[in-house]
Image 1 (cartoon, one colour):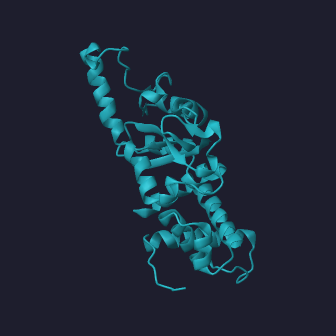
Image 2 (cartoon, helix red, strand yellow):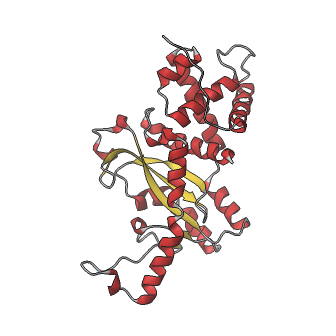
Image 3 (cartoon, helix red, strand yellow):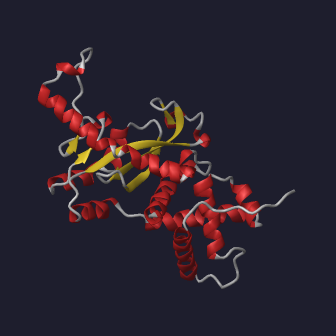
Length: 264
């Protein structure tokens, strides 16, 4: 076996932030000093390696010189600590209104997981893959703001949106903060602005000129929201393919959202 030195591809202040959260969690649990195999900083490095490199649990545990069971326990503990710090939907919408945002962007994404393969309700016909549907909000510039809990991959975006986001978005729209969405949310209700679908079998030119202009404007503005899911998945590669329990997909996504907010 050959050992080598590696560098964690993450800013030092992100590691320090997670380390402080883990230290505060240990104080809350009244964990005796020195009773853990890894200190808060080394535990933070283990977790960030998992999120950044999509490293397997037993490899991370081996590199940290701890047992696989302890490695997974540290990983799940850290995900819980981060997910608990993620902002709630109502808090996010209140902040958007205070900052004078013209709108927010609603979209959904499939987070794949091989542990869901073969379970019909978790298969997405749209993506031809198994996983969980997660809804997210982004700012007009595409900055990720909020992530929902997970629904089965076969759940349409509008159904997942009704469960996790639309009730709060209706209230926000009344207060002057509409949401832009794609055609997957047609019928979502007042305040959710989506492109008008063209008549079946006809071209876009069949729509009125004003309608085509509105559609083009909505598409242009909400296209920036597409980068929110891309940013989270590319920066936190663990979201590309979750190998932990599928029920943890929502917590993992919220943990990644919080870490993403500390990146800048």
